[in-house]
Length: 151
Length: 92
Image (cartoon, each protein chain N blue to C red):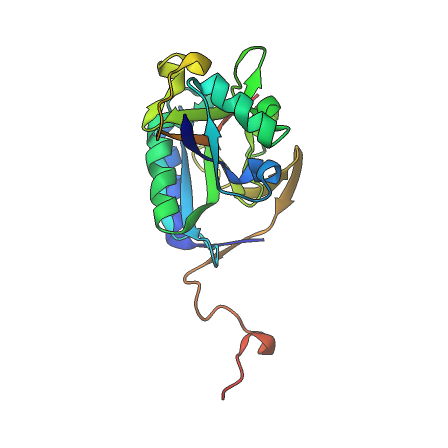
């Protein structure tokens, strides 16, 4: 399951709608030790295309180094489809190389569409996962098991 | 000539989990061949039909080797080589 803050979901939508009809792409980085999505990094689509996206390789190097220095990982890798549904294409699957990432897809094919979907893509196998949008990562657990014992 | 090669998560199965390994060579291809000798299986993930695989980016220091000679790009002693998975896709 992907748990993600509402402001980050909104930021992905804003980026996707801004770049429409080209595909938009980016990363949400989070701490390696507790990988929740925290830091939105909109990336340049080097292809500037309505049917293809590719991170600019120099920008990617800079961003990946930053994440490395901050002990962050790419928790979410997102892109938009601008004429088709928010489901990974064959090309998406062939490039998917982060087994621990949540691959998020949004579709901007219709202005009122709010399809925001998340997938794991491991060894070419797509597994869709539920998305829980939360206001904050704190205080959202209600189960007794999540309350630590006091000393 | 010794260089440090930074290995992305997806390829660390070939390096026993190591993030960074040493290799030698005067060009990117020689470095990859040396990596292959030490960590079998890496070359097939990096090279296809004699050129750099489209699924990966390789950098020498801050230079993307696609723009500086590809597999023939020069590597000098002490350089750092970074391998990253290319992040790309599309609707088809």
